[in-house]
Length: 308
Ligand code: NCD
Image (cartoon, rainbow, N blue to C red; front, side, top):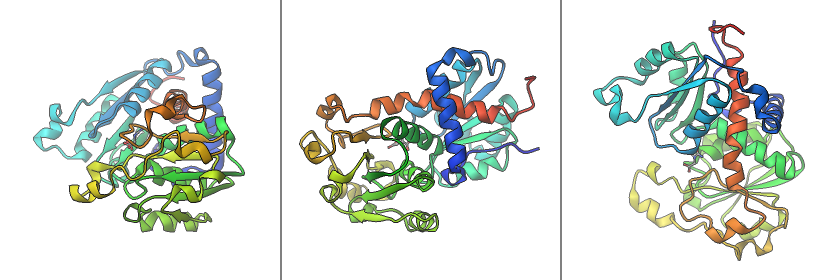
């Protein structure tokens, strides 16, 4: 028997998204109701790249569901350092756990790894590919603030390497959302993502200047330039610092605008914005716990390794 894996936001239908978001809202309202729900189950955290929010919120989510977590630790301290393949690593770890969360620098790694495991695997970021659990918490935050239909969303920054962008833009095609993409020319959406968005019926509108669309926006999703993905540091320096917002930038925005960011931020959002009512990024990060609880609950519900 095979279990469901969450590898790409393209797997998520509108009904799937709504089911997780509704469940997350129930959990948010009363976290104690699920306190023992997955007692005795184990989630393995396999992070081959740095992480604060994703790893810690999955860890917290599993513990709040009554379960436990095991952590592969850093690449430096694991057998990966001895040259073990990703396939062997996940094949072994699945024997210790009821589900796996994987982050890896190679695009496509989560899909490949999922071929070797029979417990649910969540892609927590595969290089510049996808990051679907981040998308679920992004959608939750958008829904809480401005709703998910008949809205205009601007996504700004590193659209080329930003996996949160690739996942979010795809998932938004399930809803009545106008999407605008703001970036330097060199960091526009990859051709494959643009193609998938067109196929899903989205109109992709691209801009070099935020001013062109800011007054229309209900959501402004700011992203970090993904320095670690640039093959050439000089190319990074050419675009670094180009797309920043501060309190003055937001003077032309709607009062109800929700400014979001998957975090970590470097210098894209001036700290003075944190005190404005439009700032939503810390709330967004906190939403990672109830949303990941809801996601784990649905994925672990499929396993038969534990009694109900
Ligand atoms: C993002 C990621 O890892 O893709 N962080 C996160 O999971 N919240 C965004 C980033 O690193 O810029």
